[in-house]
Amino acid sequence: MLNLRVAIVSESFLPTVNGVTNSVRKVLDYLSTEGHEAIVICPSAGAPTTYAGFTVHSVPALAYRQFPVGLPNPQVHKLISDFRPDVVHAAAPFLLGAQAIASANRLGIATVAIFQTDVAGYARRNHLGPATKLAWRIVRWIHDGAELTLAPSSTAMADLRAIGITRLERWGRGVDLTMYHPGKKLSPAAAKLRKRLAPTGEVVIGYVGRIAPEKQVERLRALHGLNGVRVAIVGDGPSVSSVKRELAGIPVTWLGKLGGEELAAAYAAFDVFVHTGTEETFGQTLQEAHAAGLPVVAPRAGGPIDLVDHGTNGFLFEANNESQLRAFVEALTIDPELRARMGEAGRRTVLGKSWEGICAQLVEHYQSTIAAGAVDTSGVSAQVSKEAAYEPTPAR
View 1: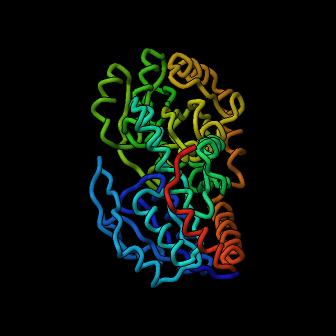
View 2: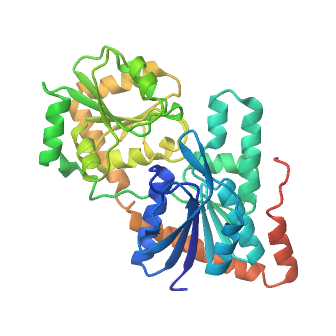
């Protein structure tokens, strides 16, 4: 099958910028380059009408904690029915994705669901015991309807298997190996920013990501009192004020939201990259830091477990152990040779993880799912079982 028709139903899209949006954009860029056809269905929040030459359809949404949440709407079924895709790609499916999967099942269209947001982890972090169980029941209910679920990490795979998801494969994320490159340290933009961040040659500890409760950026308070260290934070979000209070007394430069070459220059100006949150299903910023040639310090939880080879390209600290976080950062601060060695190892880690290669793998998953569906739907009983797959079932 040379050319595919793909309906991407995403719970997030431009102008909202996050991991879901970024990966969807990369997939659309690849599909366009390879000559496939696609549409995008996303929550109404000021999204463009086209992207990469493909039509973007916005459906009604409500705002929840600064995020638009797409609502089930008859328009979704009609859009899928009219487009007649070969496959429906549900990105981080919730209400909108669940409806799309159900519609695709009724229409006999293959479905691939991308597990990307640890909703249950958020409930667990907030000590919402019953809500955690409910969240996993919802995750299972949604993903049971899809013919294939793609998970980004070994931890996510294990979590999904534990709740009974069986049609499961691993699919990671790519990284721009040209945009994020050790050679960017020599660029005028990086040199200028470096002078601003470390005017007297301090070691720069960088963080990139949303400033939100689930990112736990306040853990950087563990660096209080470290000599010769400056902290640089890239990102914005609802927790900026509270994090600033927690980091009082630490020399911090807040760089705000950055993208493109500005973000690449920021990575190039860092000496060490620190990730703080324990709820990452993947950890794209860690890959970007590795591509830029930086050693990474991150929690031994979720996606970072697969990305950081402890003692080789960075360090993994035990979740909630801020003393260990401090010790690892200090070790890198006082040893430039260790930083260089781990940075080089980090770059080697991501070689071969281009977005082109990762998206080619995704198309292979599309094709295998379409082929399997063609066999499964050859009889009436197979179609009935496919419809039944969407029906809610008790969590195991």
